[in-house]
Amino acid sequence: MYQLDNVCFSYKRPILENISLAIQKNKFYSIIGPNGAGKTTLLRLLAGLLKPKSGNIFLEKKPISFYSKKQFATKVSLVSKEYIHFDYTVYEIVSMGRYPYKKRFNFSNQDYIKIEQAIKICGLGHLKNENILSLSSGEHQRVLIARCLAQDTPILLLDEAFSNLDLKYILSIIDALMSLNKTIISAFHDIKLARLADYTIFLKNTQIFKIIDKQEILSSRFFEQFYDIDASNLSNIGLNSILI
Image (cartoon, rainbow, N blue to C red; front, side):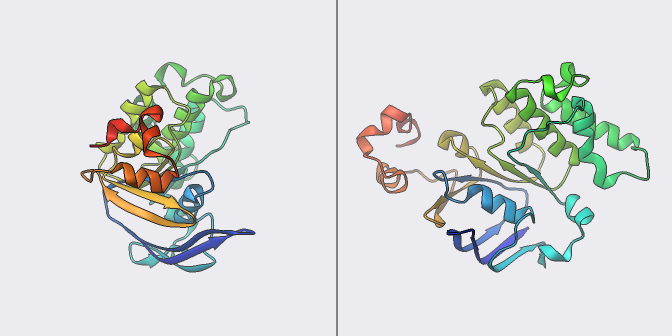
């Protein structure tokens, strides 16, 4: 799906350096790293919202720039850190995910089906006629995820999309996502949730620190090096439960 070759990006300081990565089709990838490690930047590069300072990003063996905005929107969708300040209903926001497919002024029956499916997956049926401005932060976040699902792209990019959600919705939505047979790339802060993915990409100090699959066992030494903490503190922050 994606191929990144020596991708670098910087603002006033380097954010990502020499990132080379191959993303397989229909696999779930998590990205984890400390604040400022470049998780959001990497997702925005994959979403075509940022351009690398150097290096190349390919989607289906073509440069991202090859695709028109509409073409790209039928392939890749993004849940970013945003807050909608406009006076729309939940249903109207979710339906925006279907705009890349919209014919003239009307939605098709298929569009309506996709919208309703996304609303159901995110547990928003009882809220679909509510104003987005009246919702809690967790409900608002579920609306953004539903909009992404309604877009029905083969690739989903999620930027800490579950950070404001109750555990009930985190688990049910992740379970639903994993059943959709899509390529998912999601940034997490919670290492235990990140380990649900097929592969976990650890970012640190502008670079890929390590990539592991879900079967690989992490040692206390790894966490000492990655988080710069003493292994004796792992139990205090709940990380001992994922070690053997």
